[in-house]
Amino acid sequence: MDNIFDKEKSREERLDDALNIRTANDLEEIKALENHTYEGTDYVTLDIIIDMLELGENDVLVDLGCGLGKVIYYVNHKVGCRTVGVEGDERIFKLLSENHDNYNKKSGLSSSSGGNVLVLGNTSAPVKIVQSRVEDLISISEDILDNCRLANDGSLYFYFFNPFPVDVLKAFIERVIEEAGEHHFGSKKIGFVFYYLSPEYQMALREFPLKLEQITRMNDYYKDEFEKCCIYSLI
Image (cartoon, rainbow, N blue to C red; front, side, top):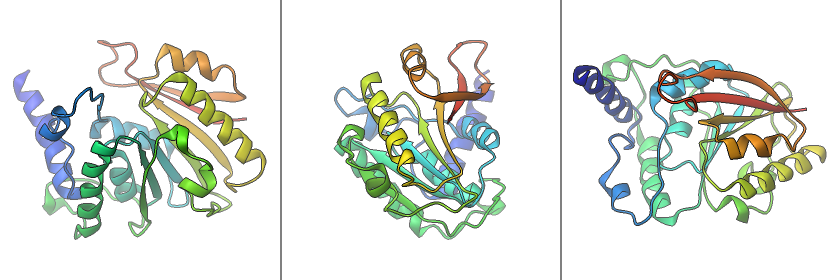
């Protein structure tokens, strides 16, 4: 069992190296933060989620509470779509900014780098990071998307890994619905992607005009019933 774990951990490190970022092995800087709640998504899980979403180059993925940025950099490089990370913890955002600078300096991902990642799209799409608590965002269209409307065939996805209290989630979804009704996004589809969906979040989602499109159990589901990814779309 230890050998399997070591192989999995080394893959995390190799992919970090390929992307020129540091997220693996619970960074000592994160461990040292008082009252930190940071927990990242592993690359194996991200591969499953990317396959579920069938992301394309015209789509946009926004990670709310993005931590060190693993999701936005991996998706951006593998798929070639525009990604945005929103992080409200000033201490974590400082580390995220270092990853952002380093990612933008990378020379490119190839099999020789040890990453062994199939690149599906054009990797010239931008990545943006925003330092803000979600509850402090005035406009999703302006603060996150810079008033750039999506292509006609592009979808807008919001990714959540239980990043904030349920009342903040509800307020955020209300804002998305409001701005979608005012046609600020221009996307053909608006989706909400939840990894490790909590019961509190699940109850809150029932209050909105959302359709549950997919549920996929992750590799550790047999150990933990919440190890799954749920995708909702705005009706």
